[in-house]
Image 1 (cartoon, rainbow, N blue to C red):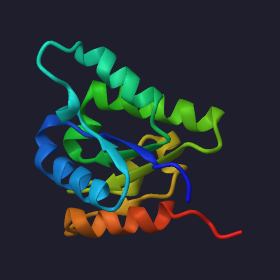
Image 2 (spheres, one colour):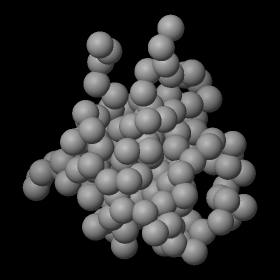
Image 3 (tube, helix red, strand yellow):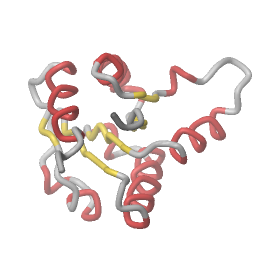
Image 4 (tube, rainbow, N blue to C red):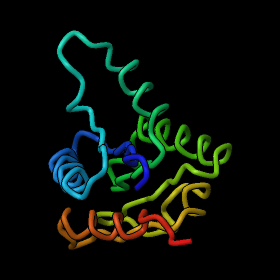
Length: 138
């Protein structure tokens, strides 16, 4: 059995409840899911985020109208896409929620197949992600 996949969950504050539930469901499915809940009082949040992004091999991007309007979310998307372009083992998976269509995504993010999470519970989305990230049998 392989090493535990490290998942960085990119989301904006407005979507925190759904993101945290998704992270909990991913953790229950055997992934090491990271959110900013891991940042402790006194930590430099920018360094904590940078470290988590550098040490993740899966980036789940929760794409909502609020995320599309966020400069910070676009920064995280850029870092994730940059890693995926230079390391074939890195996966970027957009997860769409709310009034967001595929054509609303930045072009580079549209290149990555994703999950439409509209009307789906976090546990359903986590199950779909776990299926997509399962090792391929040789």
